[in-house]
Image (cartoon, rainbow, N blue to C red):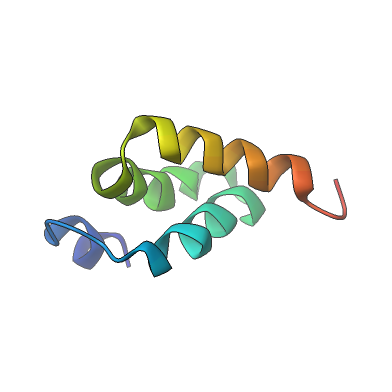
Length: 62
């Protein structure tokens, strides 16, 4: 999944929430970067950081 996302110059805003949720909710932390990296390139460091923290803070089971 990571390669096709990295090959695109831009991503639609529709990809942001699912990428952040997948990065935060994945039970194996070693794969988080696979979802964070495309978001960083497409949406910028600030938005990706805030998005990941927001998903983490609003997780219903954490």
